[in-house]
Length: 133
Image 1 (tube, rainbow, N blue to C red):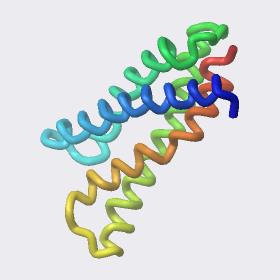
Image 2: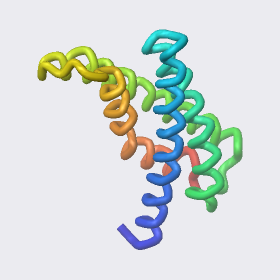
Image 3: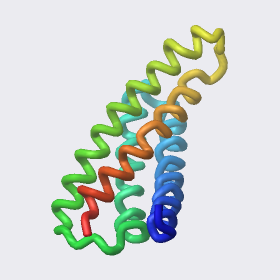
Image 4: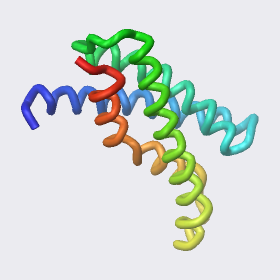
């Protein structure tokens, strides 16, 4: 990986980390008023808006495809990541942690793992599709 690509990936991770913080924190806050899966869905939408803005502004500045294509691909890639996030969150929270006899913040731990899983697939998708140069 070239140094420019490395810097871009690190910037992607930072932007994604901030968006994940919005996602994760809002899921916890929303969880006080709604169920687990609905709170994940709404938190994910908040994270997507944050991620798109940060990626367009700071990570993939050289993108030359149309804004509507950027938004469309960003949504498609993030919907795939959402499926990954929900499946992994549920798998960890409702199957893996109980299997390991962990009974402490299982949904929070599951969601944290679920948010981390799609990082690589999302980077590749956004670089090649959402923000093509």
